Image (tube, one colour):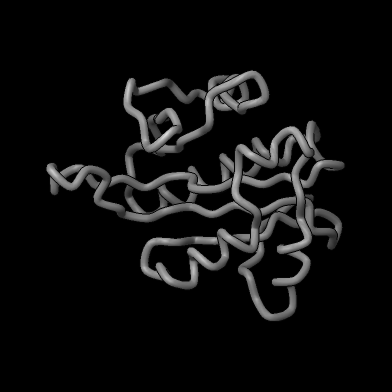
Length: 151
């Protein structure tokens, strides 16, 4: 059964070895970059390895209590920052598991919504996120669209 593990010295190399399909490489940052960002932002980053039968199958990183728009100090959000499911493990429910795990963690912390962003396009994950209850907000974050789901 799939579960999350904290990133440690024992599993960091396994986490960094996770790669997505070649057509997805431009859509999500490599795990090593995510871990570097988590290292410099430890107060907001929540990185986890997705493991099934003692095998790493994916990586997720949530963001916690981030001021979303500089002009609105009351707009604080939490959500899914990164999701990398190993190319040979996609289509087996690990992505859904990851989103639900982040949703549960955010509920535990008192959040009422889960925010994420994704690159639009033919190979992008928009249909995946919409099937999980995300709706487009009409906002953009850089070159990505913003989606939200009520918790």
